[in-house]
Amino acid sequence: MERKPGALARPILPTINIEELITKAVDSKAAVEVVKELRAMLREDQAIAAAQAFDEAMSAFQAQCPVIIKGRGVPDRSGATAYKYAPIEKIEEVIRPIEREHGFTHTYNQDVASQPGWVITSVTITHTLGHSKTSVGKFPLGTRTAIMSDTQQYAAALTFSNRRVLGNAYGLVFAGEDKDGGNPPKASATGRVVTTEIRNRFFEVTKDIHQKILQWAIDESVIMPDGSMDDLPDSIIPTTKGELEKFRQKVEAHQ
Image (tube, rainbow, N blue to C red):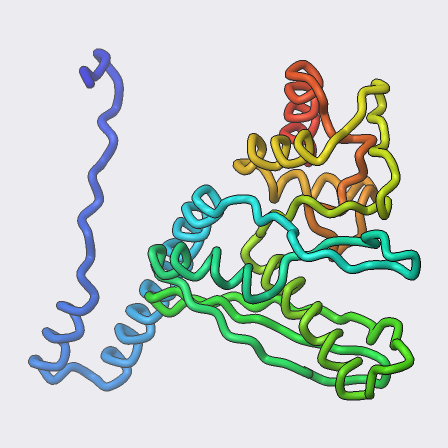
């Protein structure tokens, strides 16, 4: 780029190789405090680089990861489908190849600081460069059927909590839940019916701003703080291109 007359040139700062400085300090028998300080600087630089690599890889992961369809149904007393969910093994099947591609692994830490009537779990996502983030969730044991043992009740709640914290940690999008148990789909604010297909398409075309949508929805009390994209009510789901554009603008402008 040609510099305008009179404009000040931007100085080019030299890149400092801290590892090289440490080697020179050791070779020259510099004071121990100097070597320690240089090593501390190196660790700090490596930590910053690892965090940046984590964020970039997570962004790439979320852009590539598809919407996960809830395919397993749970019947109510009448036999109709009360709700649907994605089994943990299905979620793992979808995300594991993508997370490996972007340098991630995840591990569960179950029953962290357990409390009576609650299941508290966490999942830690670690990147190849060493940076990691942990998502923690606290969930009630839930309703126990007459034939369920204490162990089965706890296992059911634990499986649910693992699905939820993993989804929160990776920003996964789940779709396909029939929240009305077989009732007709609800209409949006404009009166248009929001079908499962419309919800799924909305999730797909807004993948780039899912985190912003969640933050907006939480701040506006549309969903709970631990809510997911699938908790968004039908009434706010755009059903036309015009509605979608206005929705995007509203979310992008939200601070």
